[in-house]
Length: 398
Image 1 (cartoon, rainbow, N blue to C red):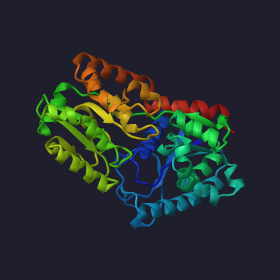
Image 2 (image 1 turned 180 degrees about the horizontal axis):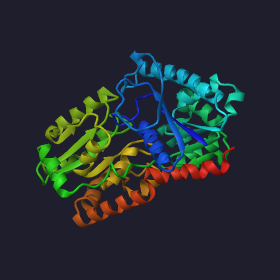
Image 3 (image 1 turned 90 degrees about the vertical axis):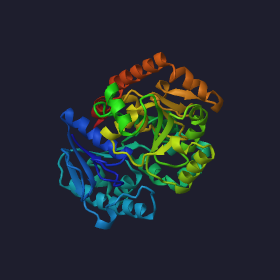
Image 4 (image 1 turned 135 degrees about the vertical axis):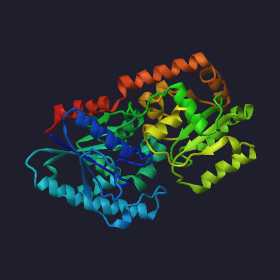
């Protein structure tokens, strides 16, 4: 059984920024390799790819399309389409020259849609099509997302209707896809995201204090962090509003946030609010943090990650923070399997009391940190997740 993990073309693998799907492709491939599976990554050509030991096959695109557009503008769409067309031709060539059954594992609607449209039924019979749905939109109530799906996710709907296996990251998405796309439930499987527990791990107190010193923070400073693209959906402004009473209590309490700025107006609005509340000295934008060691250091100096996102599939940063032993505070409306290990708030009015009970209570705080780290080690390593994929695929491969 030959597996091809398909990079989306958003940015090259290994990713230098917090590109969640690229991280999934990389880590899932590494996990398959540890289980001695025959696997390759197919990815967009990169002139500056980091040195790595991954089995990567490159799809060439014009040089001007090899940059990463974090704002997801028109050039991003052009890049996705060009890469997807080139990718489809590349995959067809692989299939034509292969005598064995091949698994193509797609993670992006553009990539799979163009492959389906450009390949014959005869060619497609030579492969098993897997699609993991990473899109947050399917997490919503159908009455609210139906028109958006029709306008912007019709390609994804088409892909899932033609996939042999569909993997989703939360139960709401699973329900929407089965019930509203009329897809056989035997094809739709709930799967978790994983985390590299060796990259994201608790650091010693000395290491934390050294990093705090590097950042010109006192040892007794308390940092609340949020990681994710800067936009209304991720709700950084909501996080700052929740934290405002706490930050005003002590000038050594801080809100740090990191991620690509998708919406500049939203970013400016957040800073305007911070200024109005006289909190600019306690609010710090970190920019794009490199995944791995650098990001892990920031997780480790945080008391908690505040994550009031409005919609998610299964955010990698949540499980990364937990793997680093950092409690995560989420809106009660977010639904995914690991959500029951998060600290949930329903009303803004009880947010401060949750912080006092779970974060500023030293004994409870330490207990939560130990429990979430153990939960991640037991059930959310990439090796564990890769095995969950294989347990579904291998008994049913054609």
